[in-house]
Image (tube, rainbow, N blue to C red; front, top):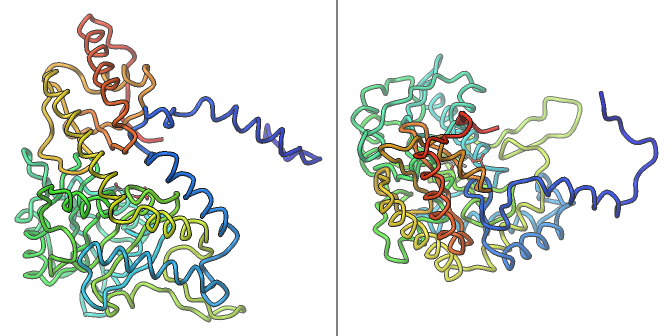
Length: 413
Ligand SMILES: *Cc1c(COP(=O)(O)O)cnc(C)c1O
């Protein structure tokens, strides 16, 4: 071990300075040059996040009796979420630590529900489009559930309901649609998936991690968003991340269920140990009060009007970038309607161009099928879209001049 704990504690002033220096080498998201990992809704929202988080940072959502404040905030956040996503009377849910937590809990709930209904007694499986998030894969791995990925439509980049239908069997505990998927930013045909789910009697989960707090406002702004939420009767559960386009502090997502009857399979309740009975709704034991409080505060701070304005700005930036890259000869993958898009060029290698953008300080994502540049936009990007387009053009010129730069591998962490 090269670092051991200091024998004597160090002064906070000194530590704070060191931390600031360390951060100097991180992605420059405050300048708007990051279009993955961070959602920048501007300084006013950041202030609310920070102060609300700090107010409740020591409180623990594990103890609703001790902290009725957090319980009430969680209930109100879930109620607001359900009202945006056509939750019917009796729909319910919980705040989790993030999308992966929401997805894991939804899958666990679906599996236990299936077992209680006599399905998948031995081996369970999940049927999902190729474009669905790896969190499903991770959750399935933890629960020893078989993953059945199904190819998506090659021109629309939407899930293929007919192909998914073919691989569903009596051991299928869940089928998945995304609203939107991450790699292409495309909303799957949830109504069509719903028909398959209803016919096969299978649980349908909509992964709206990155669209749940975006699509309803895009629709209010006049964007033609197809039915994707509890409006589709076969949708059993949804995941929607507060710490993405909900603009909440990190560590907050929501997992939602059509009814308490479905939800009942989620909480874990045990008294089989030396301590007292413990009931936990989600994967976490201790639940950070700050994350719950910040989500509640930001939602109330922005209100419907605030979100409409922010998501409208994101859609406008996306349209501007779409136009700009089309002029440079790029093809947009499918018809993105929300805050994400991917685009590819018939001649210029996407990974090489991604590297050129990285050299210019842009931290963005990449899509591999097909190799494309990828952006997840924030309100702040309105201010840097022109710069981004100029940097793409400059990067393309370098590559065309024979300077492709070092070979890049597309991966996270
Ligand atoms: C971000 C994301 C997830 C996972 O959420 P985390 O908060 O990163 O765990 C799942 N699905 C989609 C579509 C996402 O964009």
